[in-house]
Image 1 (tube, rainbow, N blue to C red):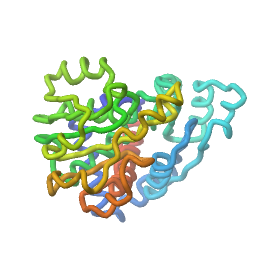
Image 2: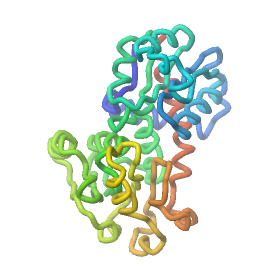
Image 3: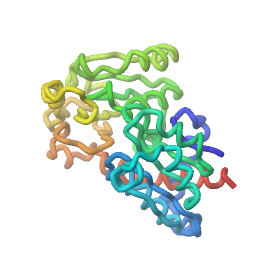
Image 4: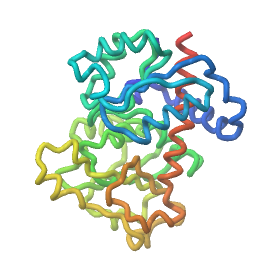
Length: 305
């Protein structure tokens, strides 16, 4: 049984293959509209979500399949104390594939160990979010035509940002990628990630607190919000939440072909005035999430036969 828990569960060639399938879906959607006819996707979201949950559901519907599930823990038997393992075993009796989001790191690993159908990690705490990473990679590929030979700036909450952790890990396998890590001291990337991914793979990276000075060299700017739900101390959140706010004037020295990404939701870290800039690609990124999840569902269901 094949699952997707961590982006490293996929080889580079598998990622490239899924990106190619997603691009084919974009070009020829009519050829995919019944690929999952008779199949059911269960969306088990123990934590709030808009884009991830709805894009999974839209993906399955556009493949001709059906969807069941819940959008918050309180509407499931978890509210009665049911374990993740029991929930997964139960849902596996009704669905062909499961997409699961959970606030606790490692919960999807437990789920995959007990599941009789493929499990997709749709985000576990501050740990992993592999399908957002696939979305990001498809977006970068569509915008730049490549996933190598570029400078990627990651800005904001790099400590708790699971999307950042997964993207760094994924792109560390491509050639000549430089990371510019822009964060306040308190929200720098975790030391384990720096040592086990960046240093171990001899990646070119710099850490800075200054977004504007880094801007001219960036091919990709990946903005993130400071996540209130990951903080134990409200005062720390309030002090750090507005550390970086991207405004049109801060893009004056940016490359003409810069691509600005954001996993969303945003709070106020990107001014709405930036939305009119052609370099703002975060809403295109949202749409790409549906296409790459369609490709992923097809791959996991094919391997489950």
